[in-house]
Length: 169
Ligand SMILES: CC(C)(COP(=O)(O)OP(=O)(O)OC[C@H]1O[C@@H](n2cnc3c(N)ncnc32)[C@H](O)[C@@H]1OP(=O)(O)O)[C@@H](O)C(=O)NCCC(=O)NCCS
Image (cartoon, rainbow, N blue to C red):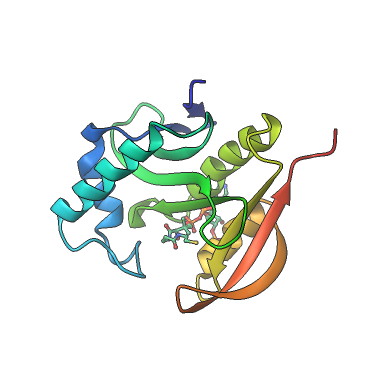
């Protein structure tokens, strides 16, 4: 299965080892990874290598996608679809560079990943866990039409668990 996705404004593709710089621009920025950014490019490189190695064995349609504005080289964010860390099922998540916030990119990219996942039966239900203090991310899940499941503690912080199901039939 070709894992690439195209939206109105964005191109999404699996990460490769050539994406070290873009990956670190996200994961090394404490304003984006506010719960604990990578302290050096070397730490980010090692994490990217582990991610790519892990993805080789994943089912089609699951994994992390690098997000670019169509026709541009710069990675502006990532969207992930993976085995959830906090519940039995699949989770979706997103991280975008600071300069790319406020333009609807996270919602647009995540919508495409969710739609494909639910339409192609990759999962019947997808979860997202968002820290209650993360207002921007809470707005993204709302715009995606995800419903509240419950509040819970995760990684030492109060989180809200959201879910969305594949349409019937
Ligand atoms: C969470 C995160 C991805 C959200 O980014 P974002 O830019 O606020 O979200 P969106 O891309 O959906 O943009 C929505 C904003 O763009 C605006 N916007 C502009 N053009 C738009 C368009 N064409 N379509 C939709 N929204 C648009 C919306 O009004 C909205 O602004 P508002 O929320 O202030 O009203 C970003 O804040 C981030 O990377 N945070 C750090 C990492 C993180 O916390 N990840 C989540 C862990 S659970």
